[in-house]
Amino acid sequence: MRAEARIDLDAIRGNIAAVRARVGSAAVMAVVKSDAYGHGMVPCARAAREAGATWLGTAVVEEALALRAAGDTGRVLTWLWAPGDAFEDAVRADVDISVSGLWAMREVVAATRAAGRPARVHLKADTGLGRNGCTPAEWPALVDAALKAQADGMVEVVGLWSHFACADEPLHPSVAAQLTEFTALLEHAERCGVTPEVRHLANSPATLLLPESHFDLVRVGLATYGLSPVPDVGDPAHFGLRPAMTLVASLAGVKRVPAGHGVSYGHAWVASKETTLALVPTGYADGIPRHASNTGPVLVAGHRRTIAGRVAMDQFVVDLGDDEAAAGDEAILFGPGDHGEPTAEDWAVATGTISYEIVTRIGVRVPRVYGGTAAP
Ligand SMILES: *Cc1c(COP(=O)(O)O)cnc(C)c1O
Image 1 (spheres, helix red, strand yellow):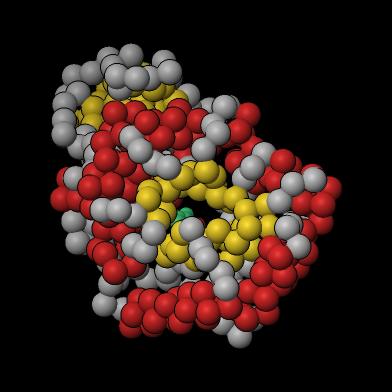
Image 2 (image 1 turned 120 degrees about the horizontal axis):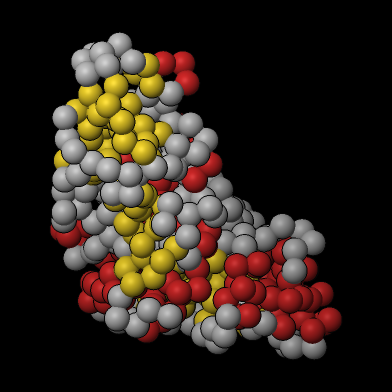
């Protein structure tokens, strides 16, 4: 083992159970885009299904098709489409398709013709995020086009939805404004004759903090993996969540160096006294942020230590002081935190980012190893 990401599938099951307990009758979608935020899509999707996630969410169609290829037959929604994308493959694979504009509705209708079967669509509105989704001004035309395609037997309009900009700041005025706008757009669509199966707005922070945003379905990404989307409000345990990823590496070398010895490129760290250095064989190619140079926390030989010098492509160094360690000993970069190891949130703070990015960026050179009682 050089380095591995240990994924606790029991934690994922427990996190979905915790979300379900919080949302009452609303359904739960586990968002498994970007290889399940770096945790490995198929095993995490299975674990989430076992715990009662009746929906899976993916950003892009390749992800949804990979779930189907792995045998998943449940509801899967895909939302990020570009012209020319594999709409027909999605229709054939029974993937729910988000439609954010008239161009996408035309592509879906063409795909249903080619596939010879109708598609399930979710109409997406931009209620204030300013990203994907049609504007409120475009909404009536999109609803009309969808209802016409539905009357023609080409689509079934099963979802109406939107996405928050600032759910992690519940008092931000945009939160109430988006809820009001979403409600108005729902009312318009329903007045026009849409009978949605699911109306959905909440991501992880909204699921944890804004019960009024739950509607019929919540879309939880980060919470599925046991990280807190609102670390200032509460850590994972505060919300009944447990981090699923533990990133470990075997020390590739340990050596004693004299005072004045420089470490790694640019000698951005120099030993102030004689000390012991440990070499950790992971670097920015594995997703260790280069911004963690001289700041990233690591547990080695039972103590929290800090990266010494620059993170290189494949390796970095930790100053162990006078601690004893040997090549082959385990370094824990982050985990749930119960054994004194840093958390992904600690890395996010150390590097000026969010825990989402810390776990999602772990690279393909790091194998994911699955644990928990029903590991595949
Ligand atoms: C990624 C994503 C989510 C999940 O967000 P989290 O904050 O990780 O829960 C939900 N909905 C959409 C549209 C997304 O892109």
